[in-house]
Length: 447
Image 1 (cartoon, rainbow, N blue to C red):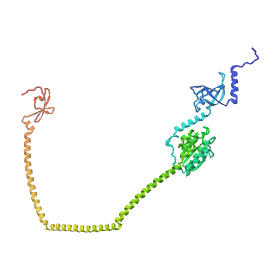
Image 2: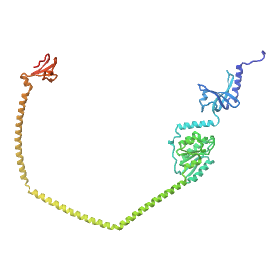
Image 3: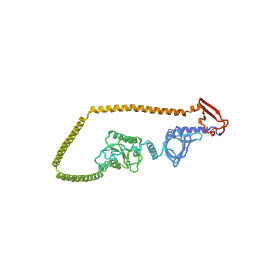
Image 4: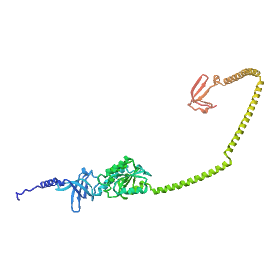
């Protein structure tokens, strides 16, 4: 073996390669696109996978500190855009890319952001029908937030002039795509609310790609529409295009032209309606005039038959008759009352009050004498009845009978009259004239 040659260890060589790769500034910030394969999701949150294209592949690792910030859930076969740096794993001598950030490739990222914001706003109630405001039937002024040079504003102007020229149109010019479009649109919506000059607001633009329409999928535009006090019609893109603004707005129109039609009544329809109302009104007025004409004719006929002078004459006659009847009835009633008074006075003059009072006093004296006599008779009679009752009670007094040797025997408070009502060993009480005797039955004998 040639001792003049210096042999490196595998470790030394690997460290040198690691130093060269990881020290290269071009390899510290790599933007890489490819397809995910051999994806493994570790229980600790790390992702191990490969990024490949048609001709090559590279191992990749994404630690949990980065995976928790992902806005989507990677899966096998996804085409992604990754940002990271080259690193060397010394134990196996392999190199890989450590991924710091990753998102779906192309339109997928925009669609993901669209779905995420849509879900968030729906949960917060931005799309609820109960909060949507009705459109005015006859708007005096219509505001339009759109590009002043686009086809949308021309279509809206022509439609309003054709359908409802009475309405005034106020343009709030805004950028509708590109950098600054979202702030331009939201600021013009806020300005329209601050001005408070319009009854309804059309917000939109013509069709385009999802990138062209993206400003209408931004959170600031959705917030401006949600907080607007003016009813808003969203008119973004073509009939098949749907944006977040369509869901938040009070009404969605498939095109700007359709939005102008929804915001205004059709003058032809209104004219037809006015003509219909006019015909109905003329018919009603004609009928009213005919009815009044018939009524007037009937009144004229009645006036011809009986003029106001005749009515006054008849009323005066009724007045004279009523006055005559009133005076006559009054004289009759006065005469009758005078006659009654005279008869009563004559009757009173014939009555001798002193004699009547004397007779009544004599009657009262007789009655008092009779009352005294009746009282003494009743007391005497009742005294005799009382004495008879006392004598009868004395004869029936059980104590008096007991004094002569009679007794009363009881069992538990019940008077005994027969031998079968008592049994041997029963305790009985015998009442005598001066007390009770308690005894026990030891023998029974029948008579």
